[in-house]
Length: 241
Image 1 (cartoon, helix red, strand yellow):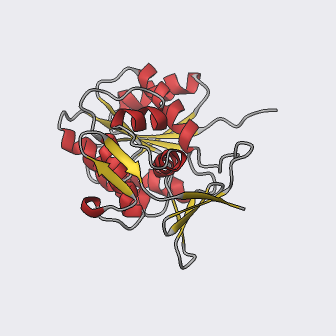
Image 2 (tube, rainbow, N blue to C red):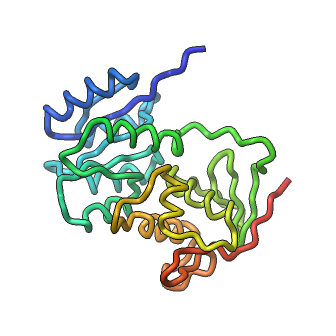
């Protein structure tokens, strides 16, 4: 059985980086295309959309923030940001706008490859196969989650698709209800590696997930902050048949 290689689009204005990544990632089995922001957005609307975007934040014209925001209006395709900025605010803003991971420039191509593999494992656009014994439908608070389609369903039956990162984080909370999870726990369980020192990306992802659940970060009832410890899902979790 032949597996279709994942398609990646690199959005960067540096031709050397584009050439390097196209060659390196191509040799590791990926189909790699380079594009500017407009071309990337057009590709997402095409019949054969990419499986992942690699977007430089510092682009002329529409920068990476704008591209990330526009992509999230109509697609949940995974996004890895590349940034040469040492300003943590830029990374946090990119994550808030919907990026799944980030990597600072200059970077080792092997590290980018590892992050691509990790992001695709947890956010591949095709719905995941459910493990044996795991219910497709889960109820918590005023919400239901369809694990097959990765959709949240509210009390009125309205559906909203989750991005891969939001879905993975919610899965972790649902699998550990009433248990305080540290930031390091959440990072390791969602990304498969230890968190870098002083990394705040988990806080950003939790804030984004709270917004998807219609809650204010300062007064969240479903996912509460435990000062000095981490976060806890307070709702009862029930599997539905």
